Length: 283
Ligand code: 2AM
Ligand code: CA
Image (cartoon, rainbow, N blue to C red; front, side, top):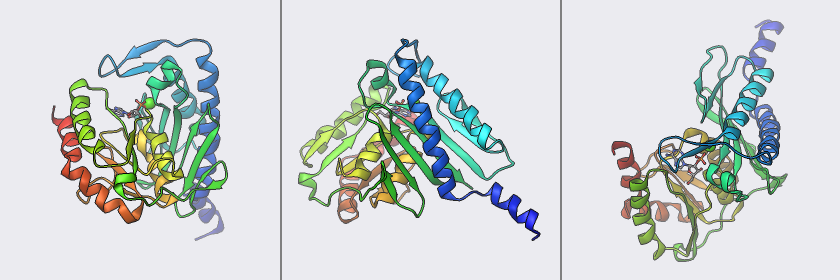
């Protein structure tokens, strides 16, 4: 390969650490934009149901992210919650962005929402950043290089028996699906230490990475909700699964300390968490 060709190949195939650095810049700037725009008031619309909301700020922040990605890396593809999949064949890199994860919290003013930015190479997530622009927390990871919260290395959740474990989960926007999810959670409540429902899947996964919760499960989610958070939790040392031997994905994400993950995942299957998630797609 000539020197010119190999330089071109390097540009087309960036390292995970380069993509992580760009993800951090993008997510931090986008978070600042969300906070600043919120002070001007919000225009709220609904999507799949009356409780599935989107604000003009979600759309503006996604537009900002798409424009910035294309400014730095014009050949890359971008998938975003509000703007859909914009495919370009020229680069192996695809970005997955959620401009605001926890939109209901954002609308209410509850300071638990995030910007999530992840980058895939050839379909594998290699870098990600989740920021909570109100608390100032910046969670990030590059595949093979560990996970960090504001430059503090993360080591994942505690190893505690399930009867002591604090488990986070989330509920969907469809009312009948939410009732079925609550049925699983009602049974789970008596089998684990306690429950948390914080309202942002991306931040829940970062809480798992940090050890602020001992376990997490939720499904279905959007790819943009989970891409960065799953990498951050995995790089911190948590075990992530989609249940029944499947990898974590939009149907289901579950995570815990490796030493009690199998027991936790088996309990979720026993309680029907996987069925509830799957049935949502059929309803
Ligand atoms: P959002 O705020 O970006 O919409 C709430 O439990 C969490 O799950 C939030 O991260 C929310 O993302 C996400 N969520 C809830 N229902 C969802 C659905 N049907 N599809 C995708 N994400 C969903
Ligand atoms: Ca969102």
